[in-house]
Length: 151
Image 1 (cartoon, rainbow, N blue to C red):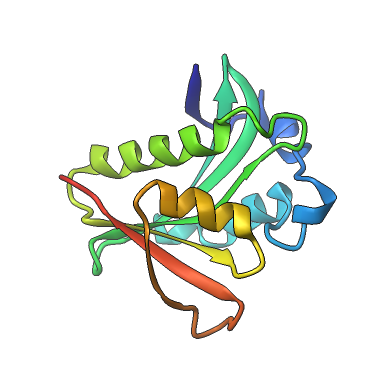
Image 2 (image 1 turned 30 degrees about the vertical axis):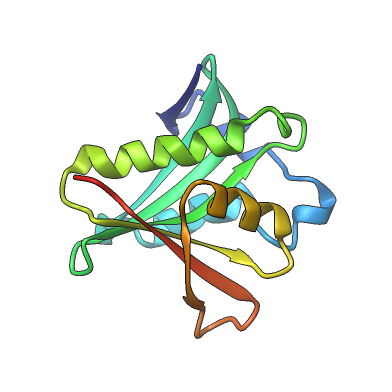
């Protein structure tokens, strides 16, 4: 069973050792960088890292942030370890992220993005009902997608 778990002392090392395929490294930052960025933004109280676990063992990483003014959450980073890909974990993790948004009961939209060269991410997001919203104004090669969330 796939779950989103808090990153703890016990699973920290496993989470930072997760890696994507070499061909995917252009699309997602290493988990240690993501966790360091969480530390930088810790006082804002709006950035949340999770270990994506299968039967308690980390197989991926999810980083989300909230925007109360926009009534939305954003998947900032999501990755599945190269040794755990092609098992449906990415799709399941996206559904868990949607469940997380619903659990708050106040967010209406879930955003994420993909690099235009990342055809697999595009296919995944569109298959889950995300709509292409706009090109990221800070990165011409990045498409922002959005999904309406039922409260």
